[in-house]
Image (cartoon, rainbow over all chains, first blue to last red; front, side, top):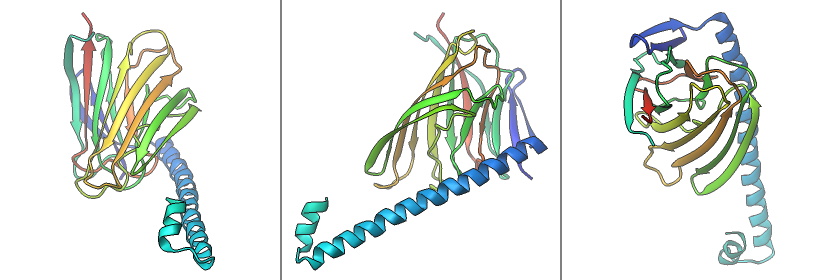
Length: 74
Length: 168
């Protein structure tokens, strides 16, 4: 059960009610959008990490030391 | 300058969690409003609406720092504020604190809002900061505030406090 806490500021009373069908539908839409956004963000992070690893490997293959690579990339 | 700071209402989330926290029937008797939110969640960042309006009239400019990086962002004409962007996967018993200030909330002009949020996490890479300037493009007086998740819930012991500020 997905609920909403409503605090009535005129009485100070808090009630817990279930979300309406409309609210649940909106949540489902937002959740789907979030899943797509999160997947894109995760993919971007992974791609950046892979590119960094690849670049470091190529620099090492050219004969640069770890210290020299760090000086270039950090 | 504010010379009163009155607690209007507060709420603590129970063991079942809650998808939304709402302050309703907010009296128009104050000059400004302040919301202090301490929240934890395992999923998404909480969002904010006024008067339960899902119209695309929310705009924001934000500065944020996550771990060692800092950046800025801009959202225009969205259906909610997405500024309380901190309480994601912090872990058990690790809460994020946010405050948002709403001046002239009962006036007839569009509403400007400011917020700041910090993650209370003891990690050199997980500490986050958000500073946000928001605009709610509505002339209506704010009578209710909704803080909600598109996915996930406020976890137990999350709290929200609503204060009224008066300048006279």
